[in-house]
Amino acid sequence: MAEDKFSFGVTPKMREVPPGQHAVIKFTAEPEQVETDWGAKLSFPILLLSHPDYESLSKKGLATSWETKSACAHQIWSALGIGTDGQHELGYDPRASEKFKKVYFKSEWKLSRTEEGTYWVDEI
Image (cartoon, rainbow, N blue to C red; front, top):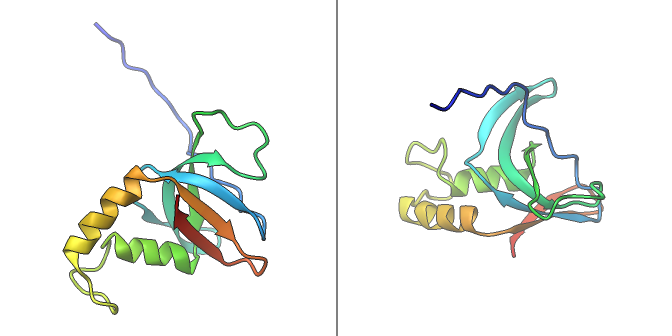
């Protein structure tokens, strides 16, 4: 008979990508809204595959979360159809959302940050 194993703690949060650089991530679950000391943010569970501030990441990556208020994160949130209640200012399409969900989980993503601090995500 297998014994229960217990685990405590919180998932580490990814450091910000420095302006002008990028990280490579893989989304591992749908995002959720979280309250932080700096207000509401979106939290994306990710597998961090590369990042300029992490010198020695394992080839398997690092399970972490990306917490952000960025416009790009809100666009991903909307594309997944989360919290839309069937409506969206750009026109919510559940079929497009299901198609995007498949790509969201399957793909690796390049998370870039402009010199001005804006985030941008591209499928690799």
